[in-house]
Length: 323
Image (tube, rainbow, N blue to C red; front, side, top):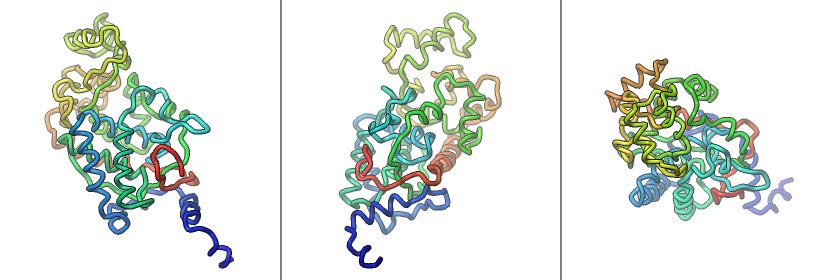
């Protein structure tokens, strides 16, 4: 046995160990995981994200959204970054197609990390760090990111379609979707505050704006609905800021907009519609520090979502394909 093992090339051994890695639990993650394996990791990722955000502030929102859409589908395993393979991946799922951006930001960060620490750092960890850095670079909170994730070798379009809440979701569906991931209603409301940055396609809220014009039961400011109809015209692909006042600043403007019935998406305004989250939305609207603190804590909890035990995992060299 010893002689046979000695004859296996080192790279094959490393890949074999990666395949044997079971899905990590939150307890397996550590803020010190790469202190010796890759001490340059965090400044390397931050530099790549800072460059992207300086060129286009919306890149920060795009990276943050990638992290959400990754963790909500089979855990934080970078499966959202995989290109289609033998089976269709997550990129083409309904909530992601022609919508998710920021892949090139993670590619650049991963390439820089590979140059510094070859084969050491997972794409899932690069994405987790990039999301944190995107928020702080846009003026939001920072937090210590627990690390030690591994990357999935496959993605599931069906799982993405089934797990990601849509822009038309009501409050009960939103609460249930987050509860299914072990996240509370408070976590859900805080994490929804990520919509204080970024933009959405007119196709995702056109019905809401039109219903506002026709008295169709949407809780929407009439002036705001008219502004949306004018901004969109007949173009479903046109982009409108989720927070029209400070679209590129990570602040509590999103919640102030909800109180004024200026939530862009139906799912946004559902957080302030006479339901269970109204009191919390009002608090965040008047206290940006409270929102920032809760958001950071909720991001850590969401970042703990792990793939199911037995999922084949590895540290991918390229975030777009398995090794």
